[in-house]
Image 1 (cartoon, rainbow, N blue to C red):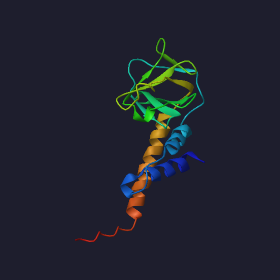
Image 2: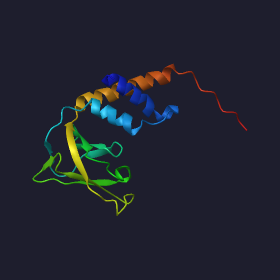
Image 3: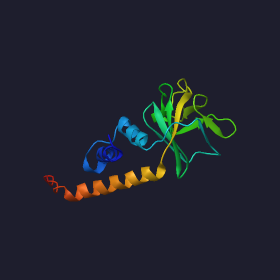
Image 4: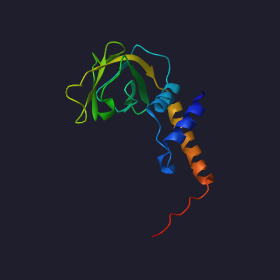
Length: 158
């Protein structure tokens, strides 16, 4: 499936204002995978993350800077990632390395017992400009779809 087709199907699924369901974790993962490059061994991380996005329990995107992001796939399921309000990434000397470093979900929704580190299996850099372009195309397609949609029926008044 092409990047635009994935982006448009994701945009349609994510359009909650139109009553459509939100995108599934699998659809969101496919969207990021479509914008990810070949696997790399590691990436540099200075200080704090700029942001992060869980993609189910098998992957996540971490934003190291506003224009730099990486898709992390885990070696196994990462329990409670969807409930985390923060994460900890193990790293040595400002390098996060595949098959060595881990992500640990944190926060009040994360079970104290299940706070098991999730081993990073692969790291893929995200083409952020292409990702942003796809998001803009989704916004435009959704705006056009809303303009072309017939007006909704007015609910009966009591």
